Amino acid sequence: MRGLWMTGAPALALAAALTGCVSTPSLNGTMGAPSFADLQAMCGSQPVDYGNDAQSVYVTLFDAYVANKRGGLSKADYCAFQTALAQRYAAQGASTDPEARRQWVEFFNTQRVKAMSWRAAVDPTLRSG
Image (cartoon, rainbow, N blue to C red; front, side, top):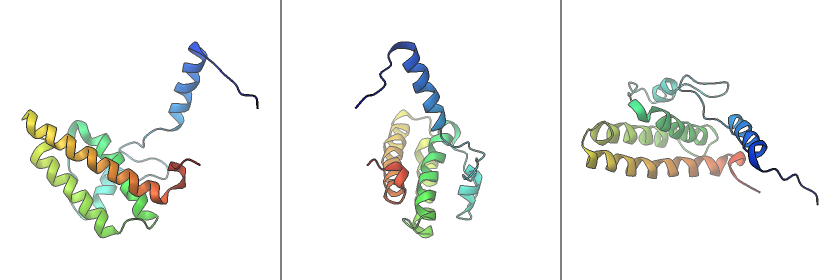
């Protein structure tokens, strides 16, 4: 078996180019991905301003959305997930208190893992093999 092995600047350039192919969707939506506002509107709630956390929350909601669209997560569970994020962000994430902010980050990271696992269960592009 023969392979291509690159080191140095060419390898970094290739890695950078490939990384650009696997990017996160824009908050405004992209082809095949609804906007952040559209994801929030799915549950009939007012859009939440997540400030500097908006992109991370969007990606998390998008993963849960994919799981919902592919039958791995009910709409009720998606909306409960979205509501829990919004409530916790309002209580802790938007706080200027470092301890409250730390609690938000800890909670959010747990929710991020949950959303990725839901999506991985129904999206073969996220599973290796």
